Structure formats: structure tokens, C-alpha cells
Length: 405
Image 1 (cartoon, one colour):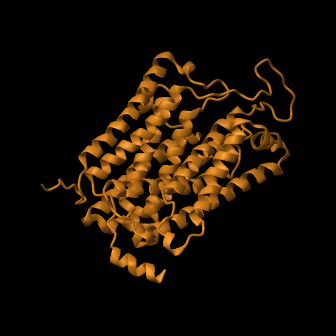
Image 2 (cartoon, one colour):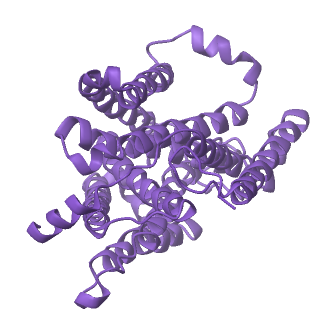
């Protein structure tokens, strides 16, 4: 009995597709349950308070938005720099970028409250606010990357893929700059106010987006019983190592820069040494598990017989977890540190002066954050099933390139 073939001429494996869809649907339903519960009872059910107003859902949301920009990196390398191996992956890269952004924005809309006034936010802009500029960048990203995907998938429009690819490349840099600037322009918070935030977010987006791309590509290839060439895996892992190393470098420069200014010493001592959970998450989650361990896994010396083992799933997975840790330390840790209302002056009140804010994410925040991940997951699974997004490599050419690398 012949098997049903899907659009990529591979067995459809419908039962597995429906199982994945069901699992993703349950996660999204959990997010919707959290949203309607918070909508009815208010944010009093969350762990957020007057000092920590951006909680765990924002950690998920900003991570997905930043990663969306980075996921487009593979397509940009193909279109902007003309690398053939990456060109074949451009459709999957573009689709993943849109799915990640959709998941991240869904969390933002549902977490901030009053999603019924979204149209107002989309049509009334205060151009003195970085949030208004971000709204423009998010909408533009959908339009430009969507157009980019059309030029990649339609042979008649193929000649337009390069100029549109250039536009998408510069637009995603602007998007990540604007996202990083949200924190860079907030002068009231000791953990935020830095010109390094924008470039640091850009380089981190490269690492997080590529890590997610590698995990999704490995999973989708296994689902469709396809083989990933050793040359491609080696190039992607080397590129990921460069991005992870650069992210660690920017982290070091960011904290050294803060230590140069006396007004930042208290925050740096707290976040690096005395911050309790935040210090642990920084050193163990962001630096060790999300940075050092992936670099060791990617470059660990192996015999020629073990070259096929490149940790191309485990290492990116750790980078993703490290990225979540980085966002938690940056967003929540930056708010938990006591706010200095009037720098250089002595003021006092009865409202938690000099006290580190207490914050524990509630189950509703976890469900809402994971719901955004579930939306990205469902969009990706359906898109790969319905459209021809998976790359088809020429193994004969790959073998020839491997011999000359």
C-alpha cells in the first residue's frame, strides 16, 4: 500500500502531525485560560507589583521578538551575501522569523491588558516614545518579510528577492535596535540605562535566532525523515559559536562599562554578587549554561570517526535557555533593584525605600508566556506541512565542497 506524500514529496506522517498540533494547541489553550483569568480578576493574580511591572510574560515576549530578528539571519546571509547553502534555507528562515514575532507580540498584547484597544495603539502614535517606533518596526517586519517570502517562493518574482532581502536585512537591524533601546533609554533604572543595549541586543538576537533555527531545522528534518549534510551542520555550528562568543564579549563589556561609573557600582555589586536568584540565574543560566557550555560542546576535540556528532541540537538548545536567563536578569532584575528617584539627593518615604522588590512569577504568567511559544510552534508545524519550506540540498555538490573546505 503506497504512502501518502506531502508537498515536499516525503511521507506525510499525519498521526505525528496531529499529535504535534494537539500538544501545541493544549499549550495555547493554557495561555488563553491565563489571559481570560487575568482579564477577569486583574493582574493582582500575577507576581507583578508597582516596582516589577514587566514580569515573566515580557521575558518570553521580548525573547521571541529578538529571536525573530535573529532567525532571519540565515536568509540574510543567503540573499545579501550570496551564500548558496543559506539561500536554500531562506524560506524556512523567513517563515520562522514571522512565527516567532507573532508569538512574541501575542504575549505582549494579551499581557498588557485592554487588547480591545489594540487598534488605537496601532493608529495613534507618539513619536517621542520608543514604543511607538517599535510598533512601526513590528508591523513593517511582517510586511517586508512576508513580501520577501513571496519573492523567494514564486519563481516569477525571484529576481526581486535580493533587493527585498536587503530591505529586510536593514529593517530587522532597526527592529532589534529599537527593542534594545527600550531599555537603553530608560534612565531611571540603573540596570537599563546604557548605549550598549542596542548593539548588545543585535548580537544576542543573532545567537538566539540561529539557535532556534538550528533546533527547528533538526526537528523538522527528523520529522520528515530527511538527512542534514555534515558540511551544513559544521558551518551552522561554527557560525553559532561566533555569535555566542560575541554575546559573551558584549556581556563582559556591558558590565565593565557600568563598573567604570561610580553611580552604577551598587547595581553591579548586587547583580553580580549579592542578587540571590538573579545572580544565580546570571552566572549559571546566562554565562555558564547559555555561553560557556555551548562553546565547549561546539568545539570539543573529536576523533575523525566522531565528527558526525556535532551537538547541533543540544548546544543551540542551551543557547536558547541561556537567552531566556539573560532576558530574565535584564528585564526583571533591572526592575527589582531599588529605584533611585532623585540621584544625588537624599529623599525618604515609607514606600520600600532601598528595598529590593520581591517577585515570584505566578502560574498564570508561566501559562501566558508558554502560550506565545505554543503559537510559534503551531504556526511553524502547519507552515512546514502546507508549504515547501524545508530545504533540499544537493548532496553531490555538498560532498565536493566538503573535500575542498
